[in-house]
Length: 450
Image (cartoon, rainbow, N blue to C red; front, side, top):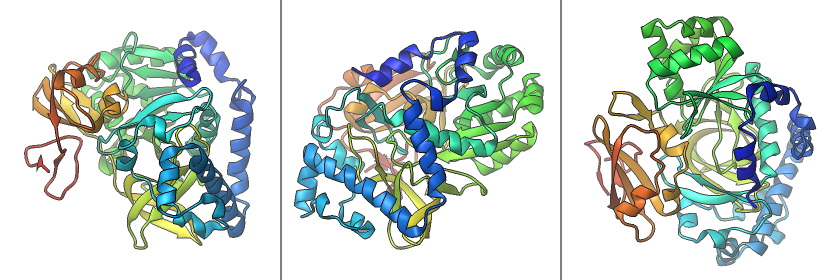
């Protein structure tokens, strides 16, 4: 039974009158998640009081536990560790973690899902596109939900956010009823980002006046563009934002610093950016400095691969026994700050940016929302997904397939609902790369087939 999917499909549908009452129930008291939420919250607070030795022991015991499980239950890890001559049971101290081989997305893509997963009760299928459109499917388990929310709420509290505060979400949701829909599970007004901003603004203004949301949350590219449109159009919604908004929560993209400063000044509120991904290995958030992310080692073990100033961000999920990710290379390059032997924070050298294509009506389709926000079924068969704009209203989806797949089959595996773009699919043997060898999400004329 897919418990996570069942919860998402049923807990989002309650009307606002019920949702607002449910939102007032503290997460620590909620059935099914309260115990896990309290445990995670206590660990976050306790971490700050630990000395270096205790922190290392905390990380070591959890990484060793998931590695031992992976070795005993997951064929992929047993073969990997045997090939490296490593048995996780032989690890004895923090430094030994580095004996475990680093796992890349390409390695996981080469193995059937069943060979890198276990049959944990209630597991739910998930897909990630990664920062360059390199898909990967895996399972998550219900116990990850309260653990994640405890950390996210702690991070957002730096902006003054409380779990019962109503927010407006700019994400990649496929279907949004009436342009702006209420999601009771997240206590949020969800915006249909595939409609023109004029239509969105009119409907959102009516809902904002009625329900008084205090925060915006979502992809920086969409939020910044919407606020810019409001300002240029002199729409009354911007007056509401200036009077009532307390903050903006930015996720999934590196926010453009210039646009961020402009929106903060225009709306007279603060923003916070946080780092996380579907794989649930690493969570970090800005606290005192924009662009610098403080790491939650209580969420998962984050480390840097490399002895120099810049290196790959490596993450280990403590609690995902359905599809363990042990020393997983996130693909993001970071400038790390390490205290003792623990990564405490980082800035991102290169990460996902806010790119877009233009639909047939001249509206922007933000690729973070369209590609990463939808988790298309094609991710189960593709090594890379890229997008090329042919002309306004027309675009090409470039799929580097991991197995035999026709263009028609690939097209049917994309969720294209509610996007006003005519798409065609091309199947590639290798992804298109830049002159520097990078694999871009948005393909331009100066890129070439690698």
